[in-house]
Amino acid sequence: MAALPRMPDGIDYNQRMSNSKDKFETRAIHAGQQPDPNTGAVMTPIYQTSTYAQEKVGETKGYEYSRTGNPTRAALEANLAALEGGAYGLTFASGMSATDTVLRALSPGDHVLVGGDVYGGTFRLFDKEYRRFGLEFDYVDFADLEAAAAALKPNTKLVWLETPTNPYLGLADLAALAALLALRDPKPLLAVDNTFATPYLQQPLALGADIVQHSTTKYLGGHSDVVGGALIMNDAALHERYAFLQNAAGAVPGPMDCFLVLRGTKTLHVRMDRHAANAAAIADFLAGHSQVESIYYPFHESHPQRELAQRQMRNGGGMLSFELKGGAAAAHKVAEATRLFTLAESLGGVESLIEIPAAMTHISTAGSPLEVSPGLVRLSVGIENVDDLLEDVEQALK
Ligand SMILES: *Cc1c(COP(=O)(O)O)cnc(C)c1O
Image 1 (cartoon, rainbow, N blue to C red):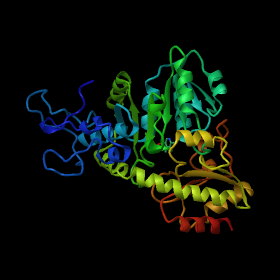
Image 2: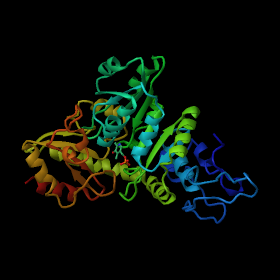
Image 3: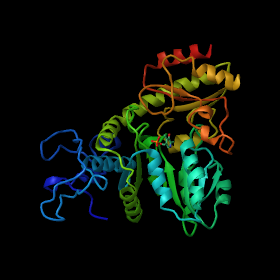
Image 4: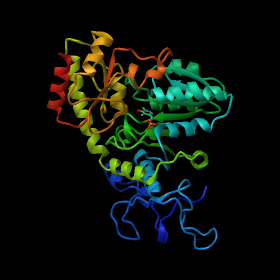
């Protein structure tokens, strides 16, 4: 792998990343970014170019072709690496293409142990595509580490999970799991989809994970206006392998998309605090409502892993799910009756969303062991005024 891309005039775009003394909020705004050396532009320019002039044959300023590298993308990759506390970041056209890169690096006959509650598209890619190429998958609930340990096989090369999970907000004890995997030879890679928590709430690499995956479409972008993905890691060889695949397969994000995610990460910490405060208030309201059967929110007193959540995460995040006593029919009614919560897939934007996972985001898990209850309602709680959100949920439940 060539040296990290350098800006014209030899100014290292990744320079700020090395300033690891900076606190999270400062890194969010400055890591990977500095005034443009050519113009002084304070915001990272959108380098909307596919190719780069060479002074002599083969003599470049670090960039030859934008599938291989682009300065706006390099700034975002450095920023995300700094936020996750990792040495390397790679960005992709979507969260799924980031996931695809990790799976593509495996070989036929390898076994992957997957969390029993994962994003529907992740299950679809594993089950409908990679199984066809000779990868083996098993699904376990990582809340039960003994069961997870028992499901490991001699050919387990990768452990893939979400914490909190989508849509049931279950947790995995990452430090304990990493310690357990470290005893194995060969040690399976531990990959954590950190989309729900974001690096502001939890940093899996520090807890022993090898790879962090993100759908930057969600909280990192934060404004529901871009689709993207990322991988962050510490190991140089792993970075080299995934960077090779990023270039070889070519599922790269465009510079405009990278710019939008960079704009998003600048306010991540402020947004996440408000998302969590609003979600916690709605969780309390729902837990006390006569028509609500159960709620799933990591920091709520009813959550069976609340203690772990409080140890592993800075706050409970903006996602919560609940089930109504009236089952699927009541769930559909509520999802169609909100005024401020928009009925839509996706999550992590400033605006509140409501959806029915079994019929929407997780439809590909129907009939599988990962099937979601048809009566489950999932909220992505936005950063509107909390009283307005509470009033909206209350009127929808009437
Ligand atoms: C959305 C999502 C993905 C997939 O990301 P895309 O950007 O939609 O490709 C993966 N994991 C989780 C937890 C998600 O929410």
